[in-house]
Image (cartoon, rainbow, N blue to C red; front, side, top):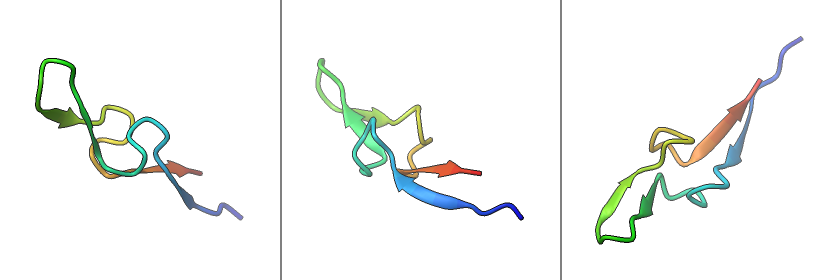
Length: 40
């Protein structure tokens, strides 16, 4: 049996985006802006 669990994305801390050094924000590439990492 396969079970899916969601974990807070470690790269963006669950925000779905991160602040770039030049100013502004961009979508987190690790979770595609969802804020969670899915493990299967």
